[in-house]
Image 1 (spheres, rainbow, N blue to C red):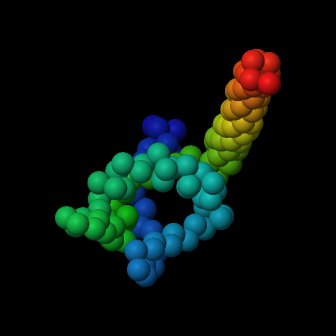
Image 2 (tube, rainbow, N blue to C red):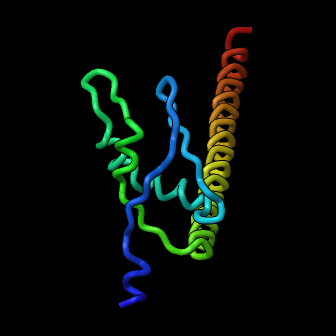
Amino acid sequence: DADQEQHQCRSHQVQCSTADGLVCLQVDGSKADLLYVFYLLKHKKKEIIGKSVGSIQKNLYCSALGTIELCHEDINEQKQISAILGSIDEKIRNNNTINEELDRYNRADIILEYLKEFYKFYKLWALYHY
């Protein structure tokens, strides 16, 4: 079936260069959406780590990256998928910011309550010692 064949996974050779543990992937913007590639590689993180070799310090070779099978839709579908995932990530970042702010307020309230209790204790102490 042509439709099934169109959506099958394909393995692609990836051109990259390395220096001091750095891998640079070049994404052809006419063939793939950069954000989609980011999410795809993030999704395949365990597989990528599994391709690294070495006992003390793991190394990932470009030849190993070329063996990773990439499933992808056409570029328009990639852009739609990456837009959805990007908006979810943005929502997560916003929620984390809100939670951090609420935690700060909560800590400030705890400190304020402590100071109030200390002030009450100090007033009682001052009554009996002066």
